[in-house]
Image 1 (tube, rainbow, N blue to C red):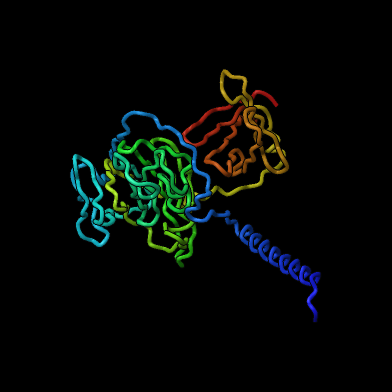
Image 2: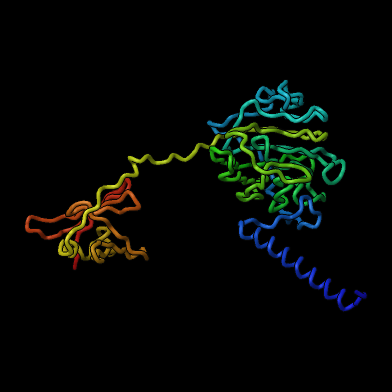
Length: 370
């Protein structure tokens, strides 16, 4: 078949159309899985965070009474080398200093959900540029790095500057101080959760304050920190060490402590059990309908009304009506709270008021009208 320019152009259009359709399908598939678009790691075109000046003055934060002290300026007893031997960093004038070539150090203890306080300082005068400028890092559970770097009037890729969740999330702001000045990170870390099968149930979450300024707001890392590729989550257990990185730069640390954050207590089945609900005749419910004074000496009135086979209550300061469940002829349960109304009836059968209890509060609400 002889060559035809029109045929060639038509073929190009068809191929391009299929390519775009394929790309759109893949993008749609990504969107359908709830995944956010990700920047290429270390993309120099990624917008840099705006610079914000932290408050001046000392930043030392005394640890709370229940804190685990990781470094108080006296020794490295809480630390070891990653290979298991003694930590080979220096303690100088109450600070811990990296020893270039000595390798990463990590805590002897392991931790899950924590509040972590770390103070650090980069060399002064500043030496190098980009990532070769006061580089170190703090690893949570030994996996998720918060970058330590001299980022004061210094350029590098956004997801690698001070306060970045390295290679993933740049800080929201550049809150860096001058080289040599002490800086602080206050970190809230929630470990990843896994099913018993090893499937990821909930990713890690990280919040960071840099020199008192929020720079990471409850972010979810894509996976463990890695370089040049993304790694998936894998179940490494519920606890891991805090690690500090040796990146061949003499970075100083001091005043390192953490608090372990407990799991929220879950109620037992016994606590969650509710009283049996009964059905009352409409004439009984109608007898309780009316207006009741919420606070003695104040004009606020709650209105009780029958709605089908239920009793409801509406407060003047609350837009939504509350539905109550009858559990006896005079007692009504609020199904979503630890609250209960008990109507008061005199010897003649007249409803005179209602007693309301919720949590540790109680009050009598006299009836003031139909």
